[in-house]
Length: 192
Image 1 (cartoon, rainbow, N blue to C red):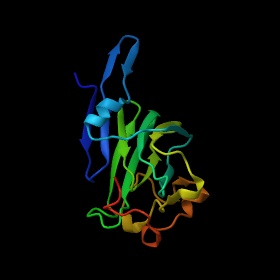
Image 2: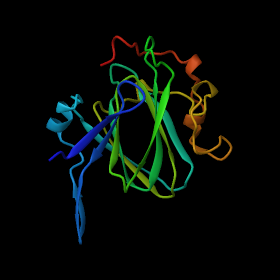
Image 3: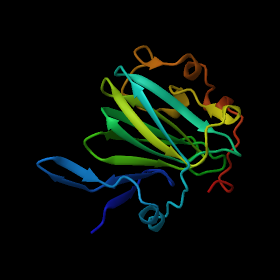
Image 4: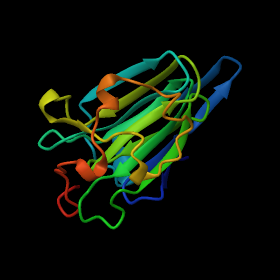
């Protein structure tokens, strides 16, 4: 019996992972990660750190973030409470899908997770108050390698569920460059 399903998205690399829940009168149990199951699905990533965030209000936008090499990160993102519109953008120079994005809705009820490979910027918008997001990464955080793209860059044409006027964004994220201004460290043939 499969504990996980792995669904490729509209871009090569990101994968929607769904866990099977076993429920009874007490609630449910589910496996959220198995190195062997993920490896069989082509995700051979050794995660080294878990992170968690709480966004108190609906309409909080976090992102679009990435880390530059040598500490570039792959992520496995899931929602513990609430819901998000989760977005990835291909930022690998030379990729046929460079600058393209895809969005999935993750919530605490649907048991979905988003695998974000290296070479993709990642961000999300909360759809409910008090939303908690947890994610695994395959490299520790490095302030020196921290990078990002402005979440509302018109060139990206992302259909966010919040307007720029109504979004709640950190000063750091509001000052991120547009994709066209980015000194990009990722190249399609080098990212794995």
